[in-house]
Image 1 (cartoon, rainbow, N blue to C red):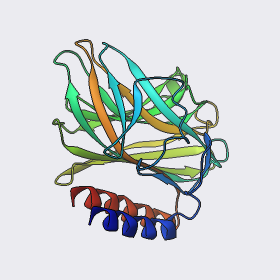
Image 2 (image 1 turned 180 degrees about the horizontal axis):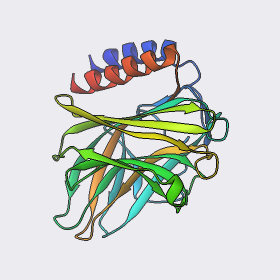
Image 3 (image 1 turned 120 degrees about the horizontal axis):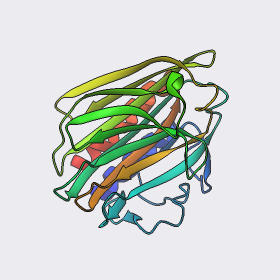
Length: 247
């Protein structure tokens, strides 16, 4: 029965994302989606053994170390310096966390490369917040620094969706978060993205706290051009992933 459900889901996904199949390099073309059921070959995790494809169809980040960060990225052609509107989304579950310090789980956006030194971080924090912040020293006038309230719990599925809209090189970035019951959103008002946020690397990012390690399992990751009908298809397919896993 599960096999039949999975086949049905992927038949639908093949209609939604015809370019997502057979992508086996670190450079991908949007619309792109990966539910981590077969491969993570598209991602470059910089030879980091802390990332692994798990039998439960998740891309897992595990570390036992304190203050350890890891990223798994893809280069999404057509984004960054081309100023193309986008929707980037992931669904993940935190399955373990040490007691001390602040932990973060989420996404890296518009990175300068696949081991990004400059990017926008969109994540959920163990301190009861979610945020959009710049990483890499953009300079005060170009900083992205927005946060909102949203507490976390272990073994709960969260969906983060970042929507970027350009006017010229000015980017407005909105981040939505949901656990399937409640939701919240924050928006970084238009800022000039032409100097520091021109990279095409998108992906997953997690960091452990000062008290020890964490385990987080990503169920899906997608990059979709916006505005267009692709955005609606992305939402429908992401919902399909969640429903299939719960089934």
